[in-house]
Picture 1 (cartoon, helix red, strand yellow):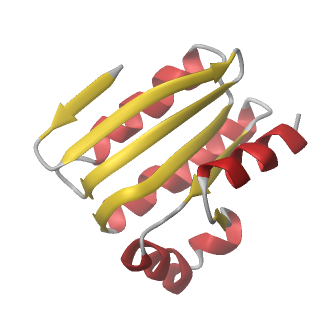
Picture 2 (cartoon, rainbow, N blue to C red):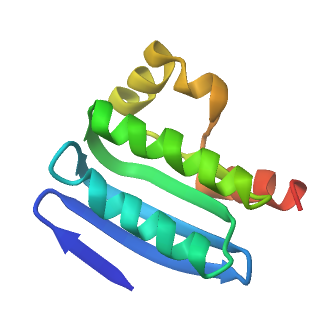
Amino acid sequence: MSDQQPNLQVDVEVRDARTAVLAVGGELDMETADRLDHHVREQLGRGRHRLVLDLSGLGFMDSSGLNVLIRSVHRAREHGGDLYLAAPTPAVRRILEITGVATTIPPHDGVAEALAAADGGR
């Protein structure tokens, strides 16, 4: 399933009953943050509490995007799951590190590594 809005694309791949990979591309900012938030809430509502966000296509993220990530990890953990970040671009990784979000949600080098971490958290 794919949802495209100006400057943001979110593709959802269901891996199993509790796990989904959301490939996020474009720009995650004040204009587009609600769209990602909607997708995360939808997956959590469907019982998929282990969410991997593939950030390899994300070229830009501002504080609105960071807020979505922080809210999402709290929601996932409230449901007994977690949020895993995969393959952030250098610009996005830098924002995660500068703000300290990388401490709360450590980024993984790729989707495979993030899925392995999610499987370890069963």
